[in-house]
Image (tube, rainbow, N blue to C red; front, side):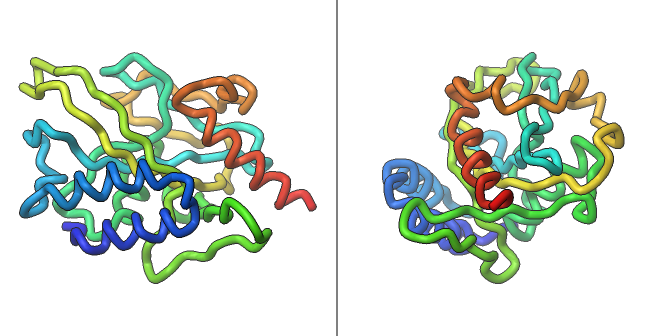
Length: 209
């Protein structure tokens, strides 16, 4: 199981890079602190669940991989619940991407955040953990089939550049109904993904210098 202190350390690092995200940092850290005995991995924790997701961008950074979620009926990035067997947030997001798209770590180049102000130097990974590019909390409707009440997902968002061929995605039909490489312009005004578009476009400008 991912240790609580490891999660909190990742949150503190995120806050140091994005001080304007203090409110989200506090929301996430208060939730994690509230959980006892790894309850952030417990699907029956009605306060909420920790999740991880991976935005997989095309090699040129102009498109992002989206899956048609079978249960929610929406186009979403690969991701899912933190599981008790996960040893780190990084291991969890690689697992989710592999399970939902068939992509391995060899197909992915991890992308790291840029500080909000003051430098053009990319942040590198610390230890074995990748650094999230964003935090996002959102309500999940009740699911009578799974006997789950409405709850909140506290999602750690990570970013990757795909280094393989676009047509080699093997999505899980149990989880998804299909996949698309979506142009950034389609997501620019999205409440859910607008921040991610701004992030990758900043990153693209750095690549193309």
